[in-house]
Image 1 (cartoon, rainbow, N blue to C red):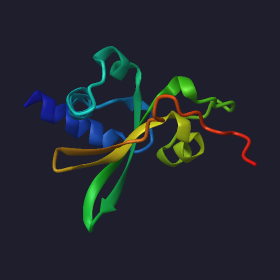
Image 2 (image 1 turned 90 degrees about the vertical axis):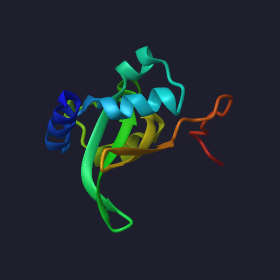
Image 3 (image 1 turned 180 degrees about the vertical axis):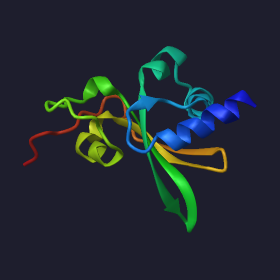
Image 4 (image 1 turned 60 degrees about the horizontal axis):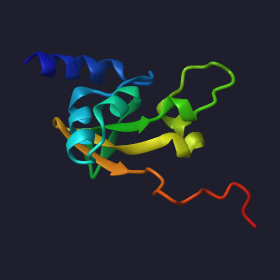
Length: 117
């Protein structure tokens, strides 16, 4: 019951603030993606309300704040992470307490080419 109350508070306050990853998402990261709990605790989450396949969902992006250089010191918003794709590790949505995530991590051994051509 307390977890559901915490999830509700997270949903209501997660419009654009850089927050800790909610408990239901932590469980998914550890069980589905086999992430270490210490690493998960260092990640952050940004969310916004949206829709997917005609249903209302909470869109989420899980990111590593250590990979973002925000020179202005402004609070990041969900859409700001489009400029920091390397920092976004997972993205997806939450619908009816179900978490759906896509893995956006760069595969090991693959280096992003910053100077194409």
